Image (cartoon, rainbow, N blue to C red):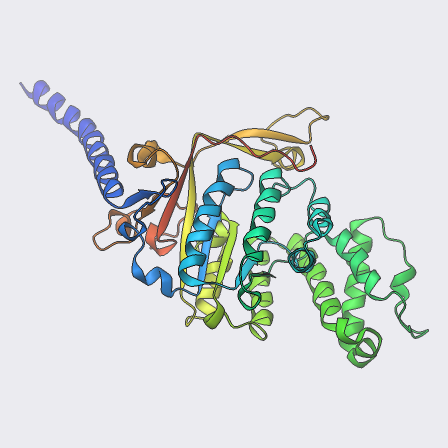
Length: 407
């Protein structure tokens, strides 16, 4: 009898967590189904999920996993809807000032060679893909239909990742200038190694700081551009030399944001920010305070909404050098990119709750199960919950990987 009683208790203890887990999954699905729409459906009732407070936000963060094909179609739908509702002016770039300059030239002139310059400079990265290229082309056409005073402007806050191309641009700014004999020697120095760029730009930044009048005289209206580019090349090397690249990079993004605040009114003009997933977290994770969180703390008057793209059974294009560097896969030396499976839908909760197309979920409504959940956030801090990081989920299903630009 005692043996049977002990066996019953043991089996009950084993089955109870399974029951609670199944019940919990059911509760998630029920909540999500009741608070979702398929944004791919023409005439979808956005008011079912879009709380009116979203339109009062000044920054709309959209987090993506780079190089997943359907992400660009989904963000295009989301972009047009939010712009129609709010008329935001700025498109925040997860790119350096170099990209901002050329993308704005593309928007101003319609000359697609400027767009090609940006993509040629970023070859070998996840962002350099055909879907992203076509997204910018559609964005240009959309922008042309707007009144000139309402047209969208690109604005970068990232460090300068393409330092070789940025170096060439900086040198071009000194062309045909009256250069004093005791300075600007870097113009004639050939650079071939990362360490050479690092040392030269450290010295150049120091010289610009020590002799601002000299560079103002030389560069005139290009002085700020040069200073800002030089600063951000140095920021790149600082981030690479730090113990925590992500933490340092995003803290330096905040320093750039502070500079942009001096000449751009986010309160009045609003911004759309399409960044990698974690950058759009509105609170600190265990190891990193990401840029959306840092801006929220630095400028509490600027209200932010964050929409996180999550993925079910998708493929992602990854540069081979990145996978080799992390040691995850052995790859043929002849391959520049590989496609890997990308999955962020724990236990298919989102898939079970979704429509046919791209499903937008509001996870922050009153009584939401996510206010006491830790699902769908990487390295979530101990005292935090999902809705501390974002308010909406946009599910992408069964997407192929993007195709590298130029292939």
